[in-house]
Length: 176
Image 1 (tube, rainbow, N blue to C red):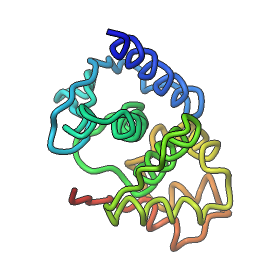
Image 2 (tube, rainbow, N blue to C red):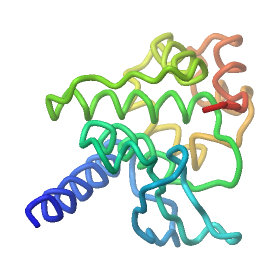
Image 3 (cartoon, rainbow, N blue to C red):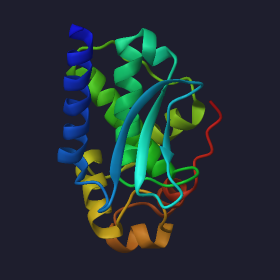
């Protein structure tokens, strides 16, 4: 029974911190909760993009470490739910946030073996900005972390290298 309360508090902490760092969710988003037991973590959204549920893998049912890692990552996607794949920018911020939360909670890092996530994090490290402040500013100016061109990104952030902007705005097609 204590685990249930701990889980709820942990969810609220991770969701709250993502909003504090990256800004509020897109207007009209309704968070429909969390379910576990999926083949991989993902965000489930309705056709109209107004309702979103976080689905965590079956590993998250057995391990708080996996639960925290997956939930933290998916909370970034919850801010601006989309159908389909996110950009490398969004995946990089999501994975960087997940690793940040793991460190803050003294959880051993669960780095992904998914090459695309590691590539996305490497791109985030190339930014000439602090990643979380940058992500909040991108969401403020462009509305989301996915769905705009490299030119749009550079129009607001001219210090970003042309090649990096193109890589960050490309669709990240992960194969888990």
